[in-house]
Image (cartoon, rainbow, N blue to C red; front, side, top):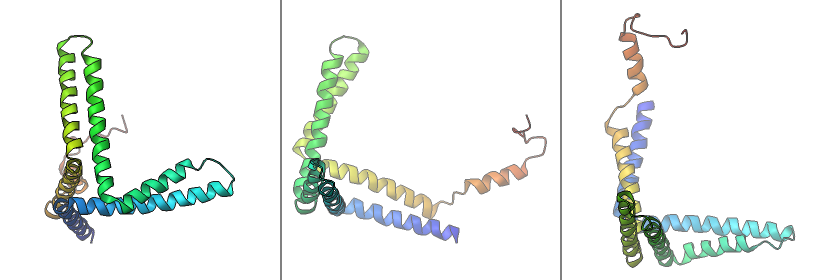
Length: 181
């Protein structure tokens, strides 16, 4: 029964990985919708609680509702915003590296400054093509799920059983009891 559970677990991971690989934007849309609904509900609940407590600190709850509405109703916009944010972070990181590591000229600082240039180039590509970050992230997740599924379905790995079998095969003089020392 335990082995069958591992296989079912692996099959589910394989199917999810393949679906994410084939339909990256659809999967993103579904996840964004679910997160958006959650943010709307949580923001409304928090807003109601703040009103009941007669608190004037409702900005956070209104922001949660606004982000939830964008994720639910403006999915293409949220995809682009995600790409712009991540691309902007890459560009910002690259500029910081260039400024920081160009002050002192050492071989190590030159390589770190060149990493800043690479980060800026990646940021520009992500800003110009914001959907590429979704495809890259979903591809990574899909490959991890597929690899996990293959391991669970096709490869029997039971390390605990193999270790106890190995320990039983050892002679008594080869086994060292750590606790008695």
